[in-house]
Length: 320
Figure 1 (cartoon, rainbow, N blue to C red):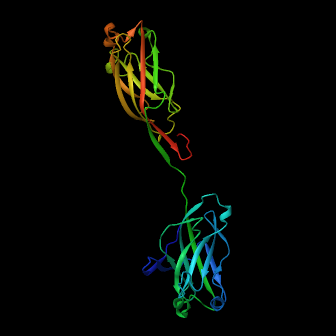
Figure 2 (cartoon, rainbow, N blue to C red):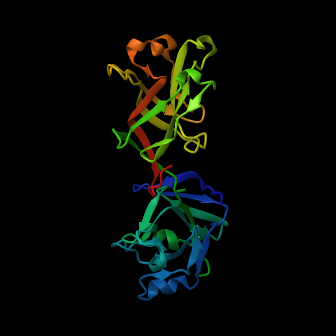
Figure 3 (cartoon, rainbow, N blue to C red):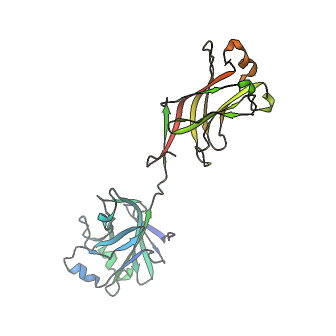
């Protein structure tokens, strides 16, 4: 429901920040009429409660103290109290913005009383309101129209601010367990396809694979370089908003001298950049040079070590 604003020229703001203004529209959520209002002052009844009403998924009551509360005997106090606490979940809380109304029955207008604050209702604080809603003199002054024919009409609007429950926790995992993968590429000189994928390997619950272009990914370097990339498996990034960070090493093993060819990469993977690495990882001339030890028996060992990886979970602990 759209909030109806309160208007007054001018608005009255007291020392406690409580704003009193007026408007034509009646309260949107609940009206509480009290007849024989004077009887409340004459008896020893310290407070009276409205009926129960529902707003925003909660049940409420208005609680009126005719002779004030907290030693405010010169004022009436009005509170909004949440009901049926035993039926609410453990640790419940409700964040609420509310405003009270007193009907001016002479001018057919509503005095709107609010402080603009969002109040947190919970098990230890199930009631909020104003200890000095109106002074007795103001309330009983016939010219104000708040009590006519011994009848007073109060009202309230309650706006429950509900979270949508969305949020994530981002963690950067340094040196995750089982973060190393080796891919043996046999018969390198006979590879005919433009690119090849390794088997999928897991790191911190995410699936990865290597992408190898035996003769280069770019037309300008075709037949001159080997291109090597890391990418998440197709099942990992399924929406445009998903991102996955990794800092990793791509390596071709020197099978003779252990003088490996290695490059370090860091990248945020998303749906627009699904693989990342080096288009010119190694020239084919260096790759096939026997003294480098990269290609032995027409077999190549490609390796990947992921040093840092992002892990994103929702607040239920589910990885997303």
